[in-house]
Structure formats: C-alpha cells, structure tokens
Image 1: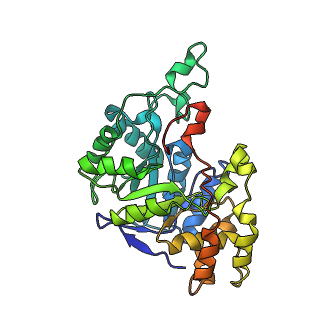
Image 2: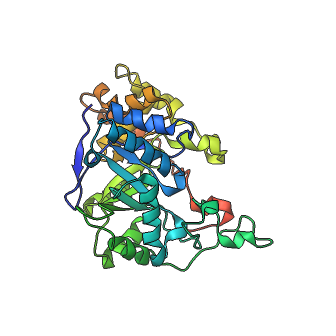
Image 3: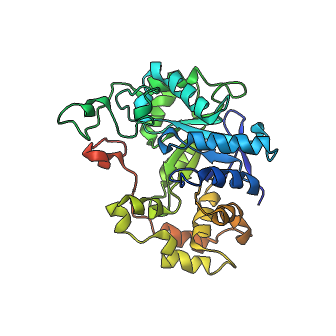
Length: 336
C-alpha cells in the first residue's frame, strides 16, 4: 500500500504507519530496519530507552548511502527518557541522541513518560541508557528504589521548545507519550508550541475513546502503541498479559478476520486503529511480517463494517499493560 501522509498542526506531514522499534532483536535490528526501508517504511519509532538508536543510525546511514531513500524522506522518532527531564539536561540528551543516530535532526521527539527520575549524566556510558537506574541505588539498602526529581512537565517542555523549529530545528515535531488529558490540558494553558502528537497504549481492551476524541478536537494527532494488546508484554512475565486472552488469538477477532480474504487477527487490529484516524507503529522481527503490516489495508477495501466495529468495541475491559503504578512498586499516579 502507499503510505498516507497526514498533516500535523504545524503543517508538517508524517506517514500514518511506521515500524515500532521497541524490543526488536538486537542481533538483527540493523537488517530489520534496513529491509523495512526497502519494502517501503519511512517512519521509525525509536527511543533512548529501547537502546537501539545506534543501530537505527547505522541502518539509516546504509540505506541513504545505498540510495534506497533520501534523508528528507525518512521520519525518525525518538523519546526523551525520564532521567533527563531537568531543563539543563534536555539539550545534552538530544545531542546524545543525534550522535548515536548519526543525524542532524530528529523528526519527532516525545517526552517518553511524564515522570522525572533523578538525573543520570548522558555521558555516563555505564548507565546509558539509564532504564530504571537512579544514582541513589548505589547506596546501601537502595537497590531497585527509583528516586524522583522535582521537575514539572512544563519546564521540560520549555527546554524542548527551544530546540524546536518545524523546518530547521534539531527537533521538527514535538510530542507527549503516556499522558492523560488533564496533564496535556495543563500544558496547553502555558506552552508556546502545542504538541503535534500523543503516543499512548491503545488496543481493543483499552480503546481510549475519550482521550482520542479530545486530542483530535485539540488538533493533536494520536499514535497507538501495543496495537496487539498483551503480545509485547508476555515475555516480560506480566501477570496481566498472562491472565487475559491474547488478541492475536481471540475468537471474536478471528471471526471478523475470516470475513475478509487473507486477513489475520493482526490485520483486523491494525485496520481498526487506522479507521479511527490513528497512527500505528506495529513491530516484528520477521521481515515478511514487517512487510505484511504495511500492506494489511488491501484486505479491507471498504473497511471494517459497523457490525465488526461493534464487536471489537465490546472487548473493552480497561486492561492497561504499561502502568508506572506497577514499576518497582513505585506507585506513580500517571493514570489515576
């Protein structure tokens, strides 16, 4: 399929389908990304915390050198990690991203979570990316304890605004991730640059109807991650993932897929999100599946029917697989 390019609130355009890079196999991710460019992907959704910016940069550089694509045809996405929210740390963090990516600018940069961890220097290679490390953990009795830093979200956003320009900045588009509406609204009251994008967990178990509607009313586009629900969390030994029906195996989704020639459960889940006007970033380590995830819409010439949409809507149960409340028992109130 040809990618659809959607105009954002700053008149920049982004393709509505990209390749998610979370949990790509580190042994093969350079080849996966390179081959994804070959088959037509142009947006790559990365993050500092995924620990594959270097590999993304290698793949992009090779694809450009091999004349598969021009830099301006690619849309490289990254995310500011929690330990780098303090304004003085934002530019060094972005500089480190650019160095690892071997790029002059990032097409879309998110704040990954609205949770300011204690600072870890971006040049501390022993603890980069920091993940859930904070310096207090080096002290006796502090193992696994996450220390926070007193940094309001708007302060981090102001520092990002200073690096933003839609045409010439080192950041061309700005976004938030894993934020609720009230926090975004609070930011809108005082920010100079409105977010272009919100990225959230979204699947039939957690459809986020109101948040998506509100964002669209505010001219903020929404990217859905974990479109397949529990699939990415099973190997993380998530109790929630183990205790729910995998959407890729769900009988009701399968019954819908059987109505459309050649369709699978994953095709139905992606089509459902696309029909809602969402951006999607499915991932796979299998290049044939990567290609299929770009071409699924051909199987739904007239889209999913209202009957199909109603069946999918009936699966909503509020299950959220990625919740900071459950991180190391830190009970951070991101979604309450």
